[in-house]
Length: 153
Image (cartoon, rainbow, N blue to C red; front, side):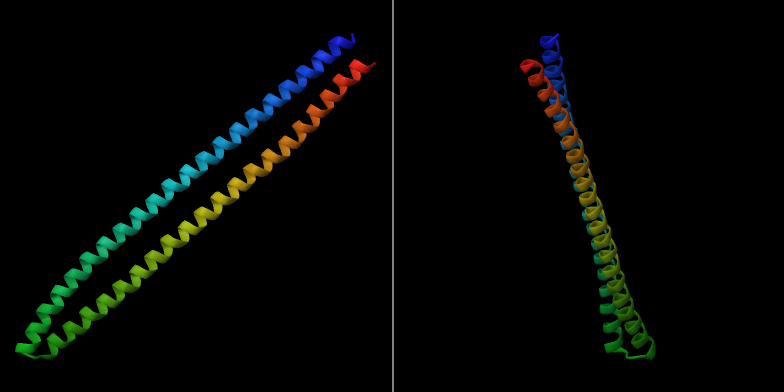
């Protein structure tokens, strides 16, 4: 009966070792997926920033053209209306720049939050893997001890 006990204990140890490998592979896959998702999100945020910049540049060009026209009109025929129009355009540009900063800040904050969440997820995966590893290691040791115990008896 001792030889049989040795066998089953060693087989148990092997099975547990295989489970450890499967677990490590699953954890690695989960972290890889997490990393890929982070990259996709970062690319989306980058595209969003570029889109915001393009829109801002278009608006800025339009304001600049209007300003040039208003200033030309004002220099040849100064009036209260052209002075007001210029002030409004300058104010509009200022407002747009403020909105641009707000948009950048929002996208930046989203990025930081997403990155922090990804880091937290990776840490959870590592922690769970470590805890399960500890349990499996203990079970492997016990199986191997009972295998060697069965041999010596």
